[in-house]
Length: 194
Length: 188
Image 1 (cartoon, rainbow over the protein chains, first blue to last red):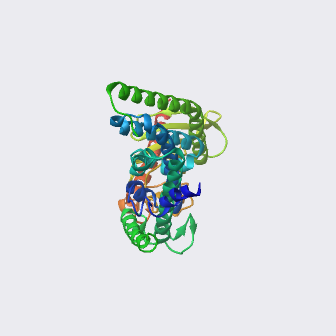
Image 2: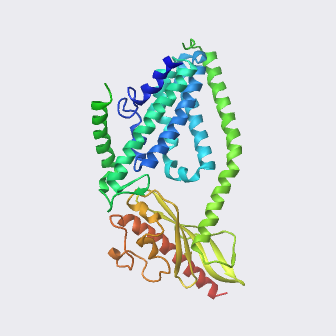
Image 3: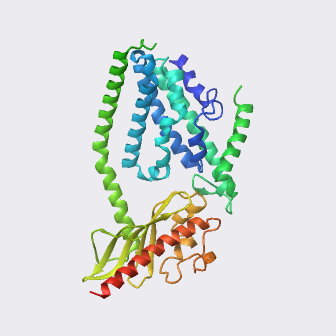
């Protein structure tokens, strides 16, 4: 089993979806206005990623080559819709902030990307671990971006006010997202990715 | 890896996958449907209660053709209306802004509550903070319902004039509906 653990850590650093693969930028830019939003969006994506990786690794051998993309999309869309229904029913508060971006997980290139690049060539265990790893990497990245933007933009972290004043407005808005992601990407690739 | 494609197995595979997925979604939907409807109802009741004075009897939802008004509820004691809760929608900065506005029969705003919004976080979204200066000025407000920039009596949220205008307009729609309702009742 320990030989498989690298699938898990790969997603965090070497294949970090945000800073290295640069996939799924749309939800990354849009939902990271605060650390909490980033964390929740990351977890939602991780849920879909793990389940779709597992199912796709199971059905990949029997799916005819020419229709594999439509089949994967149907599988992913099913899990996203499931997630949407469950969130609406059990965590309506989180759904209220993220609702708009949940359906967009269907077209999040991370999910289809991992299905294509990993799950359809690997076994169920490795695929599940890859889902967890990449999911965690995505969650971590979104949370860090959200944290930086929240700190600079409104002087708080996870909703707790840390700095006095209103902060630098631009960081809450779209330009701030690009700036923060750019700098974090530089730092990440300089210090962590060897 | 993937099986060789031919017409039969492609059609079969897609049909099968869609059937399974459709069935699964149908099953989950039938479980969550009631819970979702219940939460929506609970939120609606809570938002109505939040914008109205306590006591009295609440009517069933009534519809109106007035612009931006979805539905409204009348709170009455002994048959006389004491307040109205009006669901009012306008265009905010990021999309529809829907409020529940409590209005007294003389046109005074009792309280407001945000039902749905997609305003900018950290800017326009401040209109959801009930304790903010922007929101508290609506409590018991009677006067020119417009932001100061437009010649009214209300302070706008800093750097969120569009949201403030939309919010104020939504309240105005509600107040206008109530005054038109009361105008109608005078004739009865």
